[in-house]
Image (cartoon, rainbow over all chains, first blue to last red; front, side, top):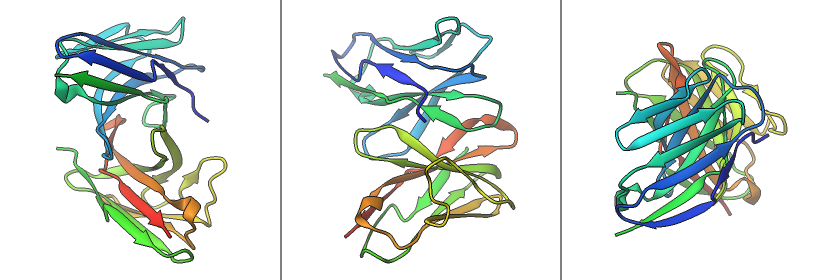
Length: 111
Length: 116
């Protein structure tokens, strides 16, 4: 069953603006990951945050994790048209195990 | 590094035929591979987890006789959709993890299946 819920389902912004996507989950996790999917393609791993971490950065990406609220957010700063894609959070319940994906947020960045 | 390929990228077949999809890790040994199914505008649904040399573990509701998974080597897993029907039409994506970095899954580009 799906564990994660994401909001918003769709987000449309102008180039240069920041985009924030949120993910909530239901059970205890080992880690939470964010992936990106361009239309009709496979997924690309963006960032992983472990359950004992609160924040992580990678380039223009910033991920936060609040295990008390069972939620995470992905912030993309200074967005570009090339950031247009679907973004999924996925929870890992244990090391090396399966991932449970959220419903995804469809991000559209207009030039 | 960590490239996963899938073949074919798309396939159209008649109802009742079987279709085999290959998933290969090109530059690493994949101890575990995962098979997902994705409907348009929806999330990925995990179908099964496949470990090299052992039987796949299927998720609840996934028919193992319908979706045959073989993981014969550390670089290849196959998914065979047997007696395909139109409702099996979907986007099938595989992923693989390496022994040295088990938490991260590397995804293939997906295979679009259309059953007529």
